[in-house]
Image (tube, rainbow, N blue to C red):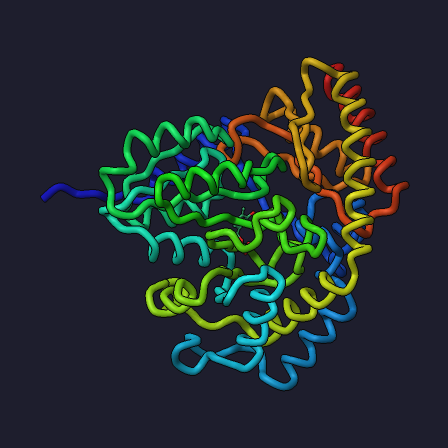
Length: 400
Ligand SMILES: *Cc1c(COP(=O)(O)O)cnc(C)c1O
């Protein structure tokens, strides 16, 4: 019998490879409430790295809603929604999401990741085709793999490429599904939704859009990119998360009643997992009420986005060609940097200077970048300080 005495040795080698590529990742705790300023080891950092675009994760109303729900309903929902996990709060939240999205119904999952996995795998199977943007979120890719469908990736935002692939392959498959982020999470640009929906109509495809970074942020009512593009009411399914602009935890799919009903019967990541906790559910409900009631948060967000984008463009021009500001139509602003080691160094320098920004590198993205996310509760002064600090960090780092 062959002996295999060291079955875990390969892990050390794999970690070594990760280190050598400058791809090693570590967690670093923040303390205190989420907000425009956060604490790390007791030191304040200006926070340009959160997904909490509207400042709702630390809002007194969402916190109070979570506390009241915990006191009334307990800490856990104690089971699958289909068994013992259902509370009246869950349907209230689903109705509020459907109202915001102007759809017939919605279903809430325990995370956005699970919503994508379960929905894609429920909608398509081995006889079907899924067309997917190259830059789609990992959870959509996971859903595609889980579905077993024929998987076709098209170039980022290329509707010509999508049309060509549908023309070549659509007829050889039973159902067709197009999946795309509306706001691309690591670039900040938008998918050209009206054109994509026209192609879906032409080729008889279902469409699932990921509004994780659009909900609460885009559109006059904060309903997302679908609203902003004037596509409300068109035939499509919208998923999103409760964990970004809504400041809570959980995911959702909004769409026609029959589809939502089908997902309740067929989405394994909804059926075989515990229902959303009362606290998360109530916090998301309170957040949606604020999204609807306080459009001024979105106005402040966009004022800040414009200020930071203009500043970063000036910096990018100054340090060109080493640096490029990627095109964006969202609060996600990315400065592309040539090397992983350099972006990590920039991130560190900025942190020492009192700024928290994302330093993102492969394999998460094809090219390394500083990823800056803007919040509604930043002061203009915060935005100007960030731009100045980035210019100084670049001057220091690129000199060496
Ligand atoms: C964050 C994100 C998700 C996952 O949402 P969670 O609720 O955090 O699991 C899905 N899609 C996109 C585009 C995201 O950015």
